[in-house]
Length: 221
Image 1 (cartoon, rainbow, N blue to C red):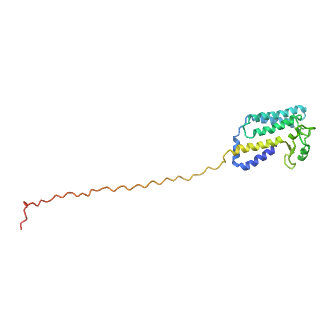
Image 2 (cartoon, rainbow, N blue to C red):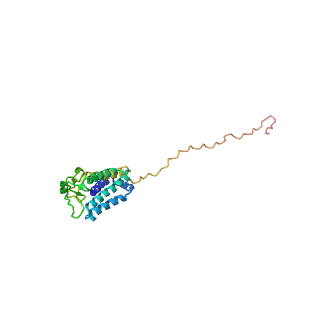
Image 3 (tube, rainbow, N blue to C red):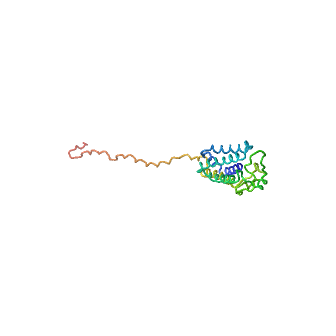
């Protein structure tokens, strides 16, 4: 399932490209519950496989309960409720079968997965399973890395991861290089009207008239 989530996220990253950086803005509440659930799974499957079966079953169910609290605390995150629904289906299947996820014998054979001796099998063939259609009835081909069996709930969880990536990234505008603006050119200033030529006075200076009256003396010859 982890591999499937990684493949789906990688394919979406090829489509969304730079928008994938939007995932860094996600903030989860009570994320420590995820680490507690994973630690619980590691202890149950690998570290404490020789303990009483009832103790391991209870511890296995507690990891799902911790994951459920985390889902409810982050129910507003896109896709998180779908993942919670997938986990709830797995939890119901395990609770109705004594803490073990019922698996299909044909699915186990197709995947090539075999439980390791001395390890707790959280998925196994159960005699007279209840709600078998919610169990691990699908299988990945054995030539794939980490081949395994998976359930309807696991499919929902992978789909939830796809919804989370797409809804978070597709709503953000694509990051692009800043556009370079052309240098601003100043608008040509309007042509100034030619200033009127200075007005020069054309009035002649009055000429004093020479008196020619009778009293004037004529020149002598």
